[in-house]
Length: 337
Image 1 (cartoon, rainbow, N blue to C red):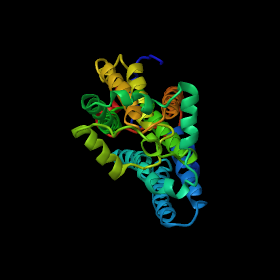
Image 2 (image 1 turned 30 degrees about the vertical axis):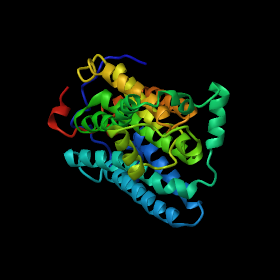
Image 3 (image 1 turned 135 degrees about the horizontal axis):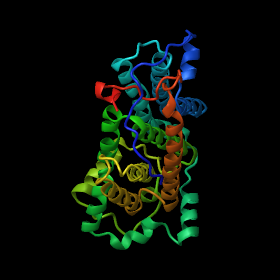
């Protein structure tokens, strides 16, 4: 992907004064690309669930979806509408009120997808795999079903959650400038597009749809994976594979920023974890090959769009540009280059 010098200078602490305009007009003027994507996603989910058949899942999904929509809309009104004064409180609210509803929408999927799904698409996804490869990888890889391999693969699958936290949380609160804009814009694209994909192509995965000669011979880490999926998994979230899209996106981001201290030595490690996670999604029978292809395509598209958008939005708040910076500084050191 693209390689470029890191611009560590964040937006200036103060911006030129402008003529007072209405709150709604100010909000619209200040909206960043990722704000529009987040609001469009929450709106889509509300509309999609609202036309689902009546039931307990639909009712709960509507409540969760409305709460996430309201949290995001209120945050954008307060922050982008500049009802709150510039400072760390406004900066912190934006991080919490826009980023976390996108993350929490994964748990919305747990009730939204059962409410939405009328027909599972496993048969069609399996047919695509068979047309491309002759057999879906989950079936082909049965020959490697021995405990050392299962445990190795399960370790990397389970480490997905730690990679997510390690990549996103420190950057969200402590990073700045171009690198922050890139990472978060792409992460929002992966999450929202991935979750919309779940609603359009629902399926249970090979483990539920197919018969295998024997269950996976796992130990500690396989047990942790199963427990996590059963307790927090959305259930019908297979297309695209976000266990593929997120790690691949992080690897691309790290490689593109490998000249910076944060990724100079860590990008090969991130790429190694990502490769194992992609393999794990198929080996552990959660995903079809076509799910993984879609996840790879999503990661590449997100990286491409985030790279372009983050550069276009770099001028916000500078050189007479009256728009609010995408990420206002949270700490004093972020005001300095």
